[in-house]
Image (cartoon, rainbow, N blue to C red; front, side, top):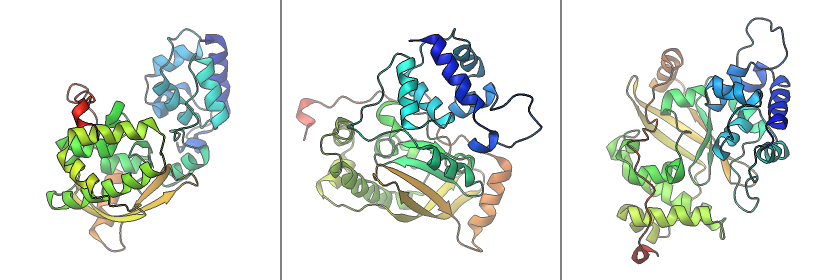
Length: 297
């Protein structure tokens, strides 16, 4: 780990950004260019003190997960992201698997959607980035680790995740998610991450295993959802899915139908802010299951 070079790189990339670049209000005139350190820390989901120590070349080695969060906060391109990993003493993410890196352009589009909930999701169901309205509607979805990063995994293994939807919608959601996952896995024939997710789900959930055996395939391009929110009730909303060229990431945009109750519910959510609906409690999340040899299919 080259602490001095890492510090200089972080500082320079921060100075090149403006609040508008990352969807933050401009506010009063700034005496120095770029974002403030605490703003980068906020965007990356880390403490300001931790980030300050990194810029002062006296922080501990950041984890790959932290570097991924920093690369998104600083709107780094893929080459810049890889350079950040190398400076921190880590290998860059492998090129043969689908990439968790969200492009700066896609993040700018996400930031521009201030009136509607939107989030970037991988084809394996991992929420990679959310705007403020998505957090307000769905809760923070980006802080999970391991297999639990996948919403699909949590759907079939954690009852709290299902509380986001009315009970009568659960069967439909299960079928849709499994059919979409099968299409995604077919595009990743040699990806160990996809194989691990499917193997763990088949071992952990008989419901998933039964649906997987049906071999239903359907790429999700749009959907009608009903979200259970503790403050505004059930929000009936359309979900449009826009896929990247590689089809390994999707931009999900949630839109209310004109004159529907959801219009007023979203307006209220913009006022009251986010509810931490499904934020992970580390003590409540079970460890990733290790499938028994007899459960491998």
